[in-house]
Length: 210
Image (cartoon, rainbow, N blue to C red):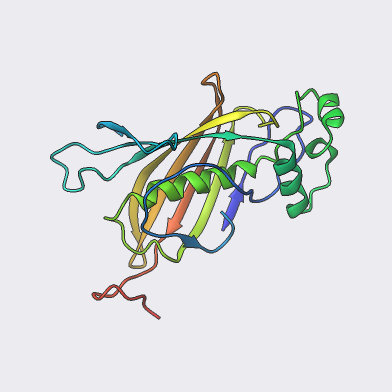
């Protein structure tokens, strides 16, 4: 997997690697393994804060969502500090509010790639609602990119909108592209992640190839 991240304003610490956690719910089809990582009528899941957007009624996969709204994700100091420790980044702005404020930030700073974990959680919810896409069990997280409007901080309440933007084929496998846009409580764009997932190949019986 490749990870590319763009930093925020001057004084923003350098990128770290993958993050953890989130809070959203969905139905089920599969999970992915590997490196740690529109249009239609809306519907709301049970007390989850999750809303999916289905396809047009004449679509053969009517009801399979292309878009899911997930959240809120509340960023807190403990999770941010835990992630920074897990990736071995000692920058004090990730753990010390005073150090972060000295750099002009309102609270401790989330490493740019912290949002990848939140995105992965939202992506999984969307893909679990897509029974028309086989091979998700054991799918490989192939690539990841991030675009930031501003850094994320402890105290932020973020909402994610995840979209399945492309289904291609590579070496006989489905290659999925998903965008996940994060907005804050005021509706302002914070960051967008783009993931590509390579599904496992299936033989006619549904078994995995060696």
